[in-house]
Structure formats: structure tokens, C-alpha cells
Image 1 (tube, helix red, strand yellow):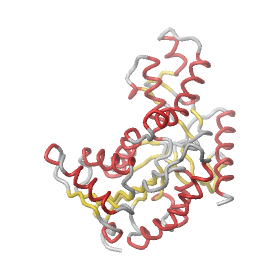
Image 2 (cartoon, rainbow, N blue to C red):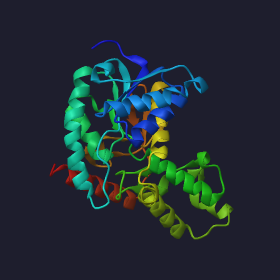
Image 3 (cartoon, rainbow, N blue to C red):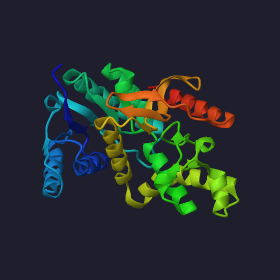
Image 4 (cartoon, rainbow, N blue to C red):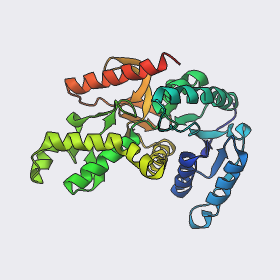
Length: 314
């Protein structure tokens, strides 16, 4: 394979999530070249034109619609393609449908580029991250999903609102599946190093358990609520994609809860799910030893089993 261009990215799938991600990436100034690919070429061309027209207000960049030949030197390949979940559809139905789509897309990616970082955003993201790793033959550190990066941001936002404090000073993770079995890792949550319960009491909040349960439920249900109100969620995930790209391109060694294939953490292997890891120019560089209570560990293992049960039939 030829030399990668570290300033080039590809977005595969130009639906709501793909086009919003491309827009966020354009504004970030991280890349100087971006190719958009979609099964509907006209859609990719329209998005490329629309986003390009904002370039005089941003930084110079080449944005265009292309095909798989154009990804050969892309350093980061972002996959958002796939069917969206219908209201009457189970996650298993959606998984089956999108695994079939990935069987067409991922081998094409691997045929044209063996050295990129593959960032999976399509849902169910954990199932599709695992599928992409197997289909691509890429090493596990270079295939990972957006995972619970957005869920963790939602958690920080809601905690910030609750505590009347800047959400960037809140350190808390959602771990496990990006979905119904996700876990709020309260044991390791803090506000600038101050234990969460202690901080709550400083703010005169004393009903910790009820507040935590309510906030965790709100995080879990926020996607459903947004979909009910506006049919799709795309701005939050687009910002998450931009943030992950930033950690890769700038080799930041940032700690992010991306979905990656597990190799024995908390007794979990051979499934992709989210726990905090260090993300840099080589992708997932190492896991972070997060403190979990026994019940959180058990919930994480149950989340892994749930994902494996979805993988088995497909």
C-alpha cells in the first residue's frame, strides 16, 4: 500500500450522521482533504458542494464526492453507512441488515487501504465494530467505534446541569454497550477530582441514588426522545466523531470510551464494547484501569453477554 496522507479522511455514508460529521470535521480544520462516498452518488456530491460553500469561513480544504479508489491514502476512514432503526424493529433485525451492508462495504475498504484507522459510527455500533474488524483483517487497535463517547458526553452534560457546574469539569463514563444495557460508571465519577457524592453535598443535594438513577435513565433514553421529536439524532454524534478524529490526528493520547474489541478486561473477550482507552495516532493505544464496583463489573459482563447473544445468530 502507498503512503497515507495524515491530513486526509473519508466518510462512507452521507445520511444525517455522515453529512453532519463531515460538516463538523470541515469546521475543525483537522484535515485538508475529505472524500464523501455514498451508494447514492448524487447525495454525496450535493453534500460535498453544500459543505464546501462554507470553506471561505473556515480553513482551506478539498471536499469532494468519490469512490473507493479515492480512499487509498486516507488516514482515517469513517463509516456511517447503514439502515436506520425503524420504530417496530428490534436491534437484532437492524444488526442483521447492517451486517449485510458491511459485508459489501468493509472488504472494499480493505482492498483499497490496509493502513488507515477505521472508525465505525453506524448502529448497532458495537456489533458493527466487531464485524468490521473481522471483515477488514485490520489489527484490533485500528478498528474501533464511536461507542459511548456521545453517551458519556450526555452524562457529563446532565450532571453539569444538575450540579450547576461546567460539564467539562465533570469526569464520568458510560461503559458497555452503546444501547439499552449501558452502565453509568458512578464508582469512578468525579468533579475535578472531588468525589461526586461529596460535590453533590457541597451543592446541597442529598438524594444521590434517586438523582443518579434518573440521570442515567435520561442518558439511556435521550436518543429515543430525540428520534421521537425529530426522527434522527446527528449533531451530538457528529461532534463525537470530530472529537475522536482530533485525538487521532493530533496524537493527543486522550482518554475516550470508544468501542473496541476486548482482550480480557474485566474477564471480557471477543466482543466489542466501550471502556475508556487512550486514543492517539495509532488508534486504541491502551486501556485505562477504571475503578468499578462489583455490581458495575457484573453489569458490564452482562452487557458483553447481551452483545455476544446478538452476534451469535448473525
